[in-house]
Length: 66
Image (cartoon, rainbow, N blue to C red):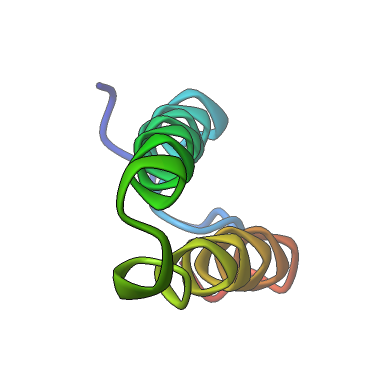
């Protein structure tokens, strides 16, 4: 990971790092879907929550907040 150069107006996270975070969140979402199929009501709330976190991360990156 490279350090950001001074004077740039982009966030400190690089696109590759953000994509790694999103990839991990998608893997978590898939695991939660599998658990939802196995355990039903216990994990049914977590899938939409992870999707919401993914959307928030993308929006924050686009607005230069992360």
